[in-house]
Length: 234
Image 1 (cartoon, helix red, strand yellow):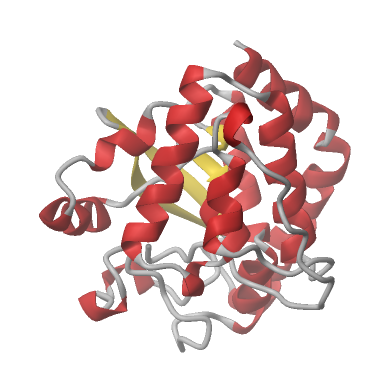
Image 2 (cartoon, helix red, strand yellow; image 1 turned 180 degrees about the vertical axis):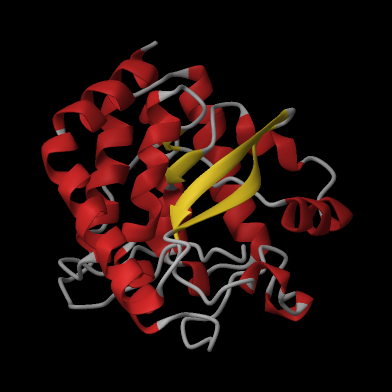
């Protein structure tokens, strides 16, 4: 209940900011890329739960029909320099603005702000080939952001990403923490806008450690670095 209350309160209070941002971003997509403005995709958000997820479209039409090479990782993220991105879409993706419409799914109780990222059928199938117990990352609902986003998608192997997501899920299910979710959300925003550097894998993993096992986390130096949110073909 604490996690659900945190989600609803944060998104409701922040509506004065994110609703106009989505409106402006949607207008930019329409102006520079045309229709459709939104991208809809079938996504797994839990072991037995699938929803039709909505994002702002950041790629060319029918980009979802392009299959990414498996050697790019089982999560099949689209590289930042991929020609599949539209000009405006590349900017929205780097700032994570294409993900904001998912707040609607959070308000509906289908997702959380913080949790393991949802998976497409293709990515779920590819991961299951190598990792039989991928559902352990969903002891809590899927989320918009999480520990992997504090490191950056290009800095993690699939094993590391699964380890981070599973560690958060176990910790949050055993002892829900508003402070932890707020910290992950805050760090996501600061890292996305280059106010602070991404964390290392070990630093991110330490955030999900039980309180009695945590030591002081080294705070990276500030630097203007950016990373993109998970791409649509992911």
